[in-house]
Amino acid sequence: PSVNQRYRTGFHFQPPKNWMNDPNGPMIYKGIYHLFYQWNPKGAVWGNIVWAHSTSTDLINWEPHPPAIFPSEPFDINGCWSGSVTILPDGKPVILYTGIDPKNQQVQNIAEPKNLSDPYLREWTKSTLNPLMAPDAVNGINASSFRDPTTAWLGQDKKWRVIIGSKIDRRGLAITYTSKDFLKWEKSPEPLHYDDGSGMWECPDFFPVTRSGSKGVETSSFGEPNEIKHVFKVSLDDTKHDYYTIGTYDRVKDKFVPDSGFKMDATAPRYDYGKYYASKTFYDSGKNRRILWGWTNESSSVEDDVEKGWSGIQTIPRKIWLDRSGKQLIQWPVREVKGLRTKEVKNLRNEVLKSGSRLEVSGVTAAQADVEVLFKVRDLEKADVIDPSWTDPQLICSQMNVSAKSSFGPFGLMVLASKNLEEYTSVYFRIFKARQNSGKFVVVMCSDQSRSSLEEDNDKTTYGAFVDINPYKPIPLRALIDQSVVESFGGKGRACITSRVYPKLAIGKSSHLFAFNYGSQSVDVLNLNAWSMNSAQIS
Ligand code: DQQ
Image 1: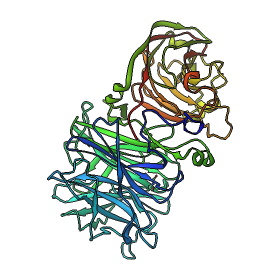
Image 2: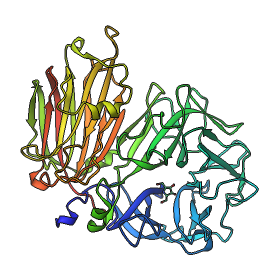
Image 3: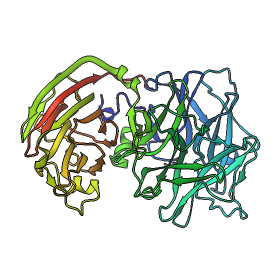
Image 4: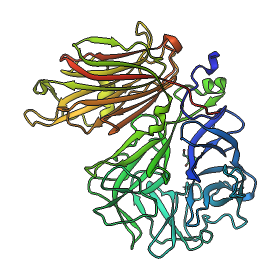
């Protein structure tokens, strides 16, 4: 590829050119998946936002269509911002989205498919009743903090509910509107939820999850608290991360009540501890699962983005469900991505990684690969005790860099690595005792980009997450490596970290993959499988 295109991904969704941000209105309709997304038709920086549109039958290969929604009326003339699809009881999908009006006020609009017999739903009609929800002097809503309608759900009273992200001063707000006919909407006196100190809530999402198993639940479904829990997610404008809380939905009061320990601010757990924002789920009625889409922006400079002519990718869609503990969500790349694995599989079985060792995994296209590895540690009583002040995993990962030796760790993978390690991105674990003789452990997962490229100008922030697993058992790690993105899943989806890197040497055939252990204790690789990944058909 030309110098400017060498960082384009092979199997992650991206437009043929220009800027992309939030995924919008994902859905399945008559067996076809739709993805809309925030797109700038005019360049590789944010602006002139329309809803671009692609469809797929497998969530991996995509067919592009013309933009579905673009500024055309006073109620969206300055931009068509994020929103969601709701499938009405008769099967018809409708879009609610935020329009920017001539006064730069944020208002909520509806659009419907022009022709339901077009399987691709290429054309959308905006209602003449728009805007359906608008800030005014009476309702006290701040016109520049009123956006991103969710998928609507039906209440017991047969009325629809939708929430809109907002804030008042530093209080994050999810404003509820209700409607009988999906056209006339009334603001509820009380928000679905709010929390102080978090700042603006962008792209809220609210959906049920089952307490048993990994199947998805349709957004309007309800059940007893021992069967169903609810997830409330926001994108915090302040920190640019996506956070979630688990709790119960009081359908009578229309209130979300987080379980104890959860607060909807930057202390909440994250979907992803790397670069990941403005995510949104939908219920996949075809395969009975809930799918999560999320946007990952570039870590390169704006000048580089303009030069390469594009910016932003979507992560591989993830199935998302509630862990058996009821305390956290689990995410896993949709199984369809395995269709891109080539037969070329490289296996390692029961290898011992001695302290300080590195093992090359050869025979795969290391710049575009899927790697699954199972580590096992022995003699855990030799683990170091964690410093009690180390409560922030990202700080642990950035302050102890990859050359700092623990008893257990760092051990993991070096990806997008040049032959002589001038460049590499390391994804690894460290295991600590929670306290002396407590029998409890802390597992930290890191994604260290600091040596990812000889280029100086990129954002090379190191990321970290705690992984809630028992280190007496095998420790799983999966990495989806795709040219300039590394999506890492620790503990079978208990911690996810996505990073963007732009190596100068470790590209194409000069990219290498290693398993490594720089901790002082040996680590076993029970199993390592790596697949070269074909490119998907995307644009
Ligand atoms: N992006 C959209 C907004 C949303 C923000 C505008 C989140 O609707 O709040 O492009 O990235």
